[in-house]
Length: 490
Image (tube, rainbow, N blue to C red; front, top):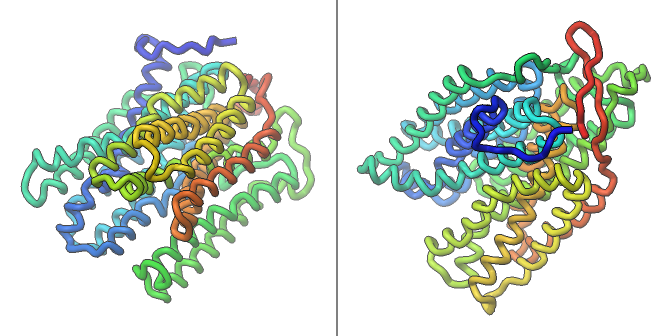
């Protein structure tokens, strides 16, 4: 059994070099994905945008990420992380440059919508890192990958305004934005030249059918289809936010058309799921060693819903919450709230490490419970609190949130190796679903109630996690020649 210790400075090891290549690729996808946020003031002035149009840009930036993570997960399992990650960085960089030099609001809105696809980059590295690290190290490795890469959004917020000033002039924001796109595209080429899908001599297992997860029986098939529904509901909610009854950025006709497209896409996806699971429908048994329980995937989905979903939602509202609660300036409130995102650097790796050391279910249970308590504490913050105490409470809560994310993806690569990309894609998409749902709740209630809703959801997820089964022993995968290979999972 492999040691759980990792020396991240030992670049003589191929897997350590691969880990650094991977997290930096993910880091760049987040820089590009969120490079507009710190420059919104300049963008608003350049195009004379209304506050409603700015809000629409923020929604459009994340709208495509939900289906993109599912699609990219399928592509990774079929074509391998190396070519998919490289392609995503190059294409994403090109879209970013086009956004930087767009001429009108319609163009930047369309390009920002397309940019949501690069938010799926996270999924690719989950499969790649899982290929290179053994079961007793994969939690920590995935935690480093996720935590350090996720810092890209904070890095963009800290560096791009300064870069825009250095370029100078009214178009400084354009050159700063384009710079990130050029770097991402160049790194995509570098990544293709340096990365490999698996260690030398190892097999990259691919699913025998593409179009959806292949489940083990009819009951899991029904469960799988049911778990697809919330993703489409979240997209419908985003459409509603842009409709005439809310932000008014879509006409009634356009909103109705999008609802129709979502309905068609749902039918198409279900038909694909039924196609790849024809054996399960017919009752043809799958060899026992190749089976997995879909409940494992479903539990990870809802766990990421409440961890990453709440992180995205809270990061979006926290600066305004601090500003209004303690009567701070926007700059001061933003700096204090940034502590929530900064915890990613240590929290995600810590969650993965705990999962490796003390057990998958136990660590996830403790972290989700801590998350629930943390949000209860945040719901009690009021103007009478010392600001320092409020910041400490926020950072403690964020540790449990992000360590929980690390614990979730410490398990994802151990469910079914040949379909890790699709499982990671669905789990990752549920994080975005959570953000949409929680932010929608926030639009109807005050901040205290918002935190309590997240805590209540965490309590439900804690109960669900108790049904998670600890990965152990080996699972079987099929080689291209039909022979069986055993993959250690615990």
